Structures are given as C-alpha cells and as structure tokens.
Length: 114
Image (cartoon, rainbow, N blue to C red):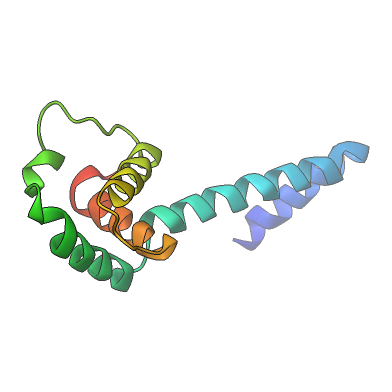
C-alpha cells in the first residue's frame, strides 16, 4: 500500500500547478463512490428492519414475486427508492427516511442487487 501511495505522490507532484485540483477531484470521486456503496449496502441491522417493515406493510397487497418477475418495472437503485417512496405515500405509511432506506436496502440485497 505504501508503494502505491508513494507512486501516486510522485505522479501528483509531476502535475505541477494542476496537482491540487486533481487531488481534490480524485478525493471527491472516491468519497462519492464510497458514500453510494455504503447507502446501497446498508448494515445488516438496517436490512433486518427493512425486511420487517416490508413484511408488515407491503405483503398485504403483493407477494415477493413482483420483484423477480421477468417484466420488472425497476431497473436501478434510484428507481427502487422512488418506487418504495411512491407506495409509502399511496398507502399513507408513516415511515421515516431511514425506514424507507432500510426497505430499499432490504429489497436491493434480497432481490435486485444493483
């Protein structure tokens, strides 16, 4: 790891005046990627809470087969979040933002794998 950091430092130094901007851009990219991965992955406890919320609220109207059918209507993590939020509103379910994210994390981990 240290040798990779040293190589990066030498290459960054060779960039001259552009080095600070390049370093900032790279740092921002890394932070965005890790934040997105963390949101998508969630914790095991979040997924368990999401599973509980899903089973208590959503399975009253449909079974899990809607998530594995050939003609899915959800094709991205963002669409999944929007779909959960849509049905939360339609059913007047009082979930917090964290609970919606827990349900999204559960569904993504269990069925969608975005």
